[in-house]
Image (cartoon, rainbow, N blue to C red):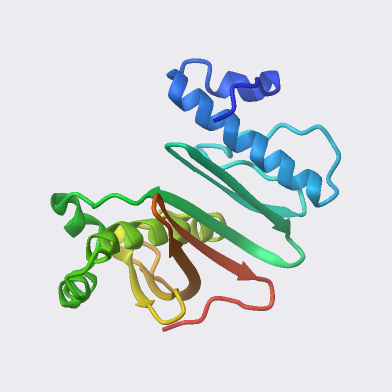
Length: 205
């Protein structure tokens, strides 16, 4: 995790935060700025949170996503001409607390997990669905500017190619759509991404 200070306005956002949060915030912003530089964006920018939220207010013409967890930080940025939204997430590959599972996973998702073989990956599926739903929120919220609960997204995993489909039904505004993405895992982490291109609008279930 990065300890190098950011610009004054960015540092002010975490002035009262604990050191762990400061390291995460700095690491995420440094990673995002490095990604912007790779795309040719050379201006010195402040990646301040959007009003009332935590996600960065990306420069005009760009979309992106930041994720961080213990020992890992990453950012993805792309031109808005090509992508409407990007969501990435990384989580430690540790079993999810059974008491939390029912809050994250729908009844159908829990039934799917129960049907899976009792191998070394069965304990990963709850955390995998959590990781995926984090990316769904990161794509859905910037577009619709409304909250999306865990139970408002139902995910179907395709284990043959490590892809997923998610049916969204945001209850408050009655928004229905379908997103697709990919997931993977290694010995330490679970990864997921949802990318919404400009030519691929979310479909309606």
